[in-house]
Image 1 (cartoon, rainbow, N blue to C red):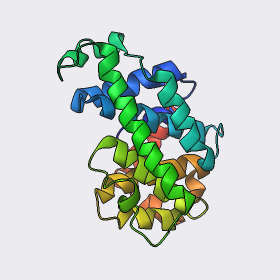
Image 2: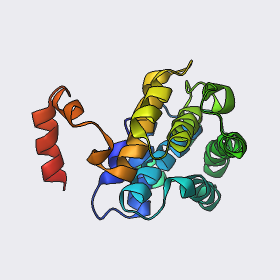
Image 3: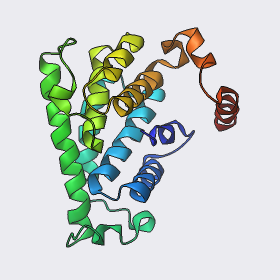
Image 4: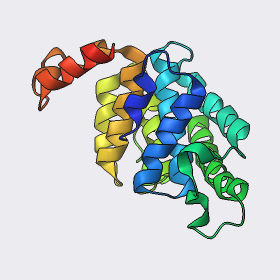
Amino acid sequence: MRVTPVGLLPAIDDDTLADLAQLQAGMTHGHPTALAAAELTAYAVKILARDDASLADVPSRLRARCLEQRLVYRDDWLGDLWERPGATTPDEYIARGWDECLAALDRLDAALVAPDREADPCDATGAGWVAEEALATGLLCALLFPDDPVDALGRAAMTSGDSDSIACLTGAFLGAAHGMDAWPDGWADRIEYADQLAALGRAWD
C-alpha cells in the first residue's frame, strides 16, 4: 500500500516505475512476490491516473505485465537480494513472485465472472495478509463498485482480512481512476497533516 504514490510520479516510464516500486518492497519485504505485487500496484495506479486504462481493463493489463516481466531481475537496484531466500538464480527468484501474482489474478478473474457485492471479497481473492492477495482483493473491491467509490471503500474496510491495507489499495485505484472528485468534500479536511500533504502534491505535480 505504501507504493501507490510511485504510480503518480509525472513523466515516469515503466522501467523506472518498476525499479522504484521493487526497491521499496525489497527494503522491507525481500520476498519476490512482494516485489512483483508492488510493481503491479504502482503500474495499476499509473495507467488509471493517466487514463491509459479503465478499471475493467486493469486485470488484463496486470496479467500482461506479469508475463512480460517474469524473468526480469533488476540487479542494478536489488543487488544480491535474490540469494537470501535460497534461489539458485535471479530469474528463478523473481519468476516465483510473478507466478504467485498471476495465481492471484486468476482468483480475481474467477470472482468477476459472477460478482457478488454481498460476499466477503476475502473469500474470493484472499485475506490480504500477503502482497498479492492485498492487491487482488483491493482491486476486486474497486471493480465491484467501479462507479461508487465510497461504497467500494466501505466494502474494503469491512472485509474479514487485512482491511486497512485492502481499503488503502481500493481507495488508491478508485482515486487514480476518478480523481479527488471520487470522495466527499469533507473527507480531505479531516486528513492528518493535510496541509503538508497538499503542499507535497502541488510540488509533485
